Length: 315
Image (tube, rainbow, N blue to C red; front, side):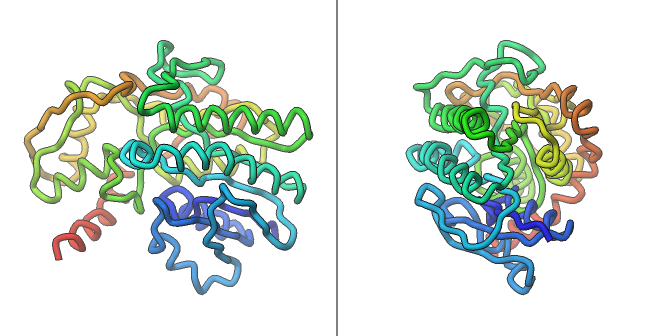
């Protein structure tokens, strides 16, 4: 039974990753400090003998007894509303936290995967974005705390790979959605679904012509697992290449809910990317991976979770 550590285990992606690995026969150690994670996301794992949990901040030294085969470093605030409120913690988990996890991987002889981000490309001047594009990032803008934390995380991961021969993987995650996202995390999908379910206007920033590509969580984590099992140390895009404008996405959400809501336009945030679409040629060739879940199906799987969360806030 392989043993894996998942940091950020109580988060949206981390909790689903724990489920996936347990389903594959892993022993899973979850770690989270609950700054943005939610204990409810892992409540169902409490009685699972193959799952253990440590409440710990990975920016502090990590002591973990026993052997370890893989480390999935997913701990980090990941939405603008979070990392704009806690920019220093965001930078620390990307730098000190990644350093500590890499040190643990080296001590245990474990494979290491860093959950990086498409934000490494910034507001891209190349479209769609391939892995060999270096990006267009403002290091001193309000989003720089997240973008540069992840870029540093990639750099130190490659340093450990080159200097120590550590088996490392870098996954650049594009917009992902699914159950267990926080209603208030500021990202477009929970915002639109929450507003639509509460009979509110849908908030669109800018004129809504900016584009995004939305990947269902199950697809993303299948890509993460395949990447971990590969021998590829350089960054690999994992995301859905189906691109649409934010206005188009607003309409798709309303169609899925069977409602029609007015649109409220707001100023575009500073350094907000105008386009975002992964080039997944590498993932297809290297991992035999591409998304399987269409947006309509993904929304159908996601909406019941948000209905539950909205009803909780109402009552």
